[in-house]
Length: 407
Ligand SMILES: [Zn+2]
Image (cartoon, rainbow, N blue to C red):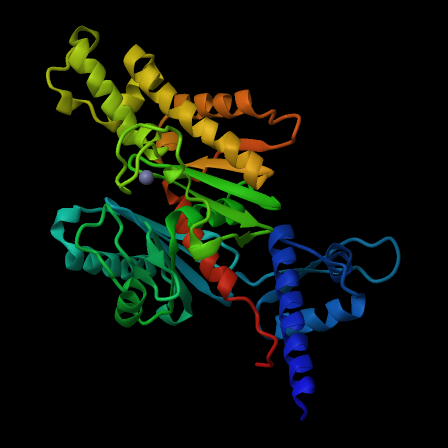
């Protein structure tokens, strides 16, 4: 065989694989679809669709369901995903919780666990707990372990996706260069994919939330500690040079300002995350303790206190949360101008726990960018704390697509 023919074969294989994925994704988004509709939706010829569907049925990805209506000729058979083709576990490891979900191939959640822990227990103890949580989720779901196709673990950066390694996350003291993928794979015996939690949140919203079909999605994660972003273009991650895209927490919003954990000055994180809100309210308490009935010590003012205060109208809490939201909204307006997403989703503890933050953040972005005029949707995700764990599931499902080879 000449080398040219080899290249042609490889390209043919890649094209077939892309088309198989396209069909699978179309069935996933439509839930039930006929071959004729598939041809119209994908732009593939009827003959190609018939061939590819035959392979997907043979490999167990698809099932033939009930028949639809037809005015003339045979009634079309609807195709759907085979929920039992395989099962997936998604895990988010935060600095305080292990959030674990188990889903079928249709991405229906069958089991979920949220296990809080104390980081001071140390890395080995937390890794033991993570492995035990995955094992417990599988046992609790009733799915045989052999039928779990993969585990998607997501956590804080910096990280190496290629090596499946946590590099040195600031809130994980003692976790420097932790090969989390290898550790969990060895101990659970199931393939693991590892990714960043803020990127996973974008996947979670796209696959499980309300962003399906969005062309360019920006997920804005605002946490108690830290701020980050994730970008999807046509459902695929846009990661940028060194996978650093979307890192809005360290965009600069002031020439001078507070020192950030990253070592620089004037980062969004220093004025926009939960810590910033708590700092501001504590500073106000130091000046005007009379505004804080029943509080005798600044230590009593934590994130929960501040968001509850903002919700119930406490002036100092409203002001602090409003300021954080102003800054985040301002950066979002800049993101909208530079990245041009059609959809921006707010997620993370700050928006999840504080509706006032969400409102003020959207108001701040709208004041700087005409969202309606430009047809940009910005909203708060309803997926709550599971969003990144669901993203872990999506990452596995995205990697488990069909191959062009015959099986
Ligand atoms: Zn920074």
